[in-house]
Image 1: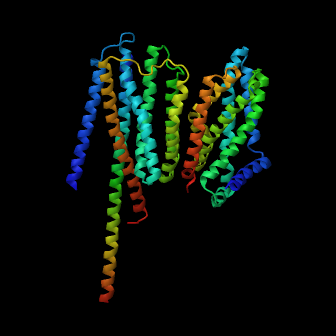
Image 2 (image 1 turned 45 degrees about the horizontal axis):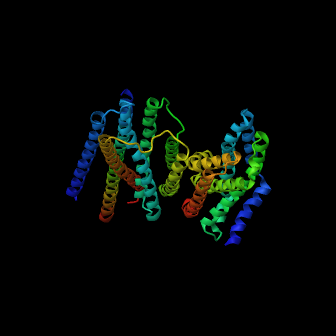
Image 3 (image 1 turned 90 degrees about the horizontal axis):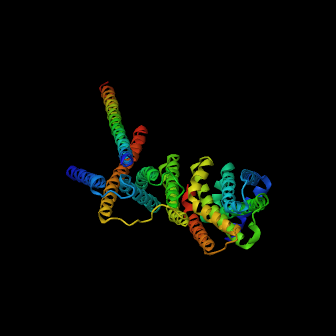
Length: 64
Length: 223
Length: 228
């Protein structure tokens, strides 16, 4: 019976380990997506900033 | 088409004849393996007959892997492969040519190995030369068919040669088993239905894997 | 759209819970319901695990080859993700089959391992699986990886029946399909069904994860190159 219990535990733990690995991978993916979004957002802000400055410069040039 | 095929085979054989970089190591390794096996085995005549088949085929597999592994090695150097791809011929014919070259190499290896085995272990392998020839040629064709395809695959991965032996060994287990058993039956002078069954298995294996190789080789070398 | 996605997620949870319940029922039945075998005793209960993982290991290899072949025809990487997911779980099950079989053999035959035909064939299957995963891990470009591994899986799946045939022609001590008490057979079926259902769902989830991983990689490359 001990042998059976050992086999049972071996199967159980390997499947758990595999699922744990999948879970960690999933977390990593979520982090990557967050990071991408953050980067995209900061890119967008920088682009907006640049456009604003250009507009200002344009307006100043026209006023002069 | 056959002229092109012949040209591809001839090209490989001639370049091997001129460079002599694959066959000598293969033959030397095969002889060394045969020598070590026979030195280690102080056995009765009957036991030797039992073992000679497996020893012969293990030696063939390990020494043959050298030749099979190099079948695309030369092509990768100096852009020969790109030139070969420009040659107006389908990939399955390139596969066929490489496969035939490997069959020739394995046959050359066995021309050395089998007499050596007979001399060292004193097993009457040549009692039925025709039947032995059938076993040997079917076995070589099978080894070369699987080996050439896997060698192309390993080349395209760009990995070292140890990968080929690793991939090929599980795949060729049916051939090694069938050939060892059939060779043992030849050595033991029992060419019965069991022998014929192994031959049939070999034929099925050969036909199946040549077909697969010709069908799949295009996918392997696709750029 | 959101509702649809939520319904789908709900369906997945239900399927996963159902499969887990089926698997648990099978394992509990294997422990307590199935009759104890006369000669071997409690050890024989390993069979329920052993046969279930062996069955899935074989099926998963067929799945790997089918996924690879479909990729070669359709050239859609989703099929390669299927193949990889099936190969990973198949490899796990194949290793578990060797392990549980080895534990059982130690008690039943008095040895961890013999070169019995079925054991040899199982070992060869494990070798082919391992080679497949090694090749996968050594190619970077996704389409090349998919092509190469598909070819390898197809060659392997054609090889397996020949391996089984060749090894079986030697005499062996492994029972082929032994006679069984009806209640034992029922428990075995329950175990096989439960494990197959559960692992198939895992394969499905893993395939989706692999696909997402590839998409995130693509997206990141585009963000870094400022290509929107």
